[in-house]
Amino acid sequence: MNSEKNNILKILSKNNKLWLNMTKEITRKSNIPHEDLLHDFYIIINHKIKSKKLFIKDITHNGNINKAFIYRMIKNIFIDQIKKEKDFVVKKNLSNFIIADNEPYVDMEKKINDIVDEFYWFDKKLFNLYRKKFHSIRKLSAATNISHVVVWKTINNCIKELKKKINE
Image 1: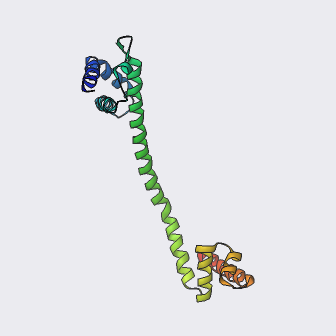
Image 2: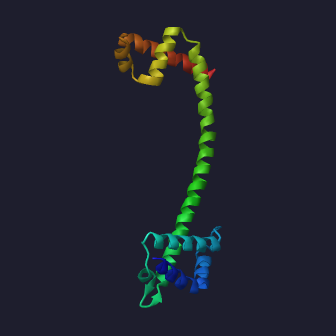
């Protein structure tokens, strides 16, 4: 296997200038250095040889190097790098957006909690159960064994009070 690896790398290194030109062409409109792409190509070739996924017959065709195979391999490595770079940028921008977008929500949530804390203790308990756990007057009524009408009136009055205080 070591001789297979040496043979493949020897064959590839003979055309190093050609591969370098290919990487220059592929990375021409990107900020990825073409030398890095070529190094990654050689690293992946080495790894594939070690894991017995690449043989001399794969990179040659009729005794000559299969340039289309090499080009596709380099191009795929480049595309993978672009995807990783975009994923990083997207995640970074998304996290900034989410943090910035979440601030008004957090402020409103705090304001609602402050208003709810001023409610009578029964109204506060019932409204918080409705808001945070049940989201349904019928389910809350069944779980607490409190009349459906009482739960509805309490929740309705709490919502009216919230709207009134928020609009002030």
